[in-house]
Image (tube, rainbow, N blue to C red; front, side, top):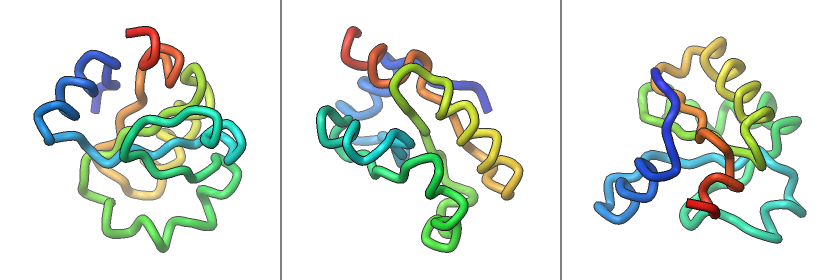
Length: 99
């Protein structure tokens, strides 16, 4: 599945059709700034949280971090685990806040 732009995500949020959003930054980063409705699961903790996420295997999931690097790793990991609709937020939260 293709990645998502900040503009598309904001439009989806305003239409109340936003996908599940997972912030893979560290907890302290999430506490400084966050996308409303997102769930914080730091990248290093993601493997241990797979059981909690099993209901999302076929749901649209957007992963994000600060700029896109960690979330690209998270996307690849989740796809390897059988998640079928994972998208990376292009530009991360920096792009989201700038747009």
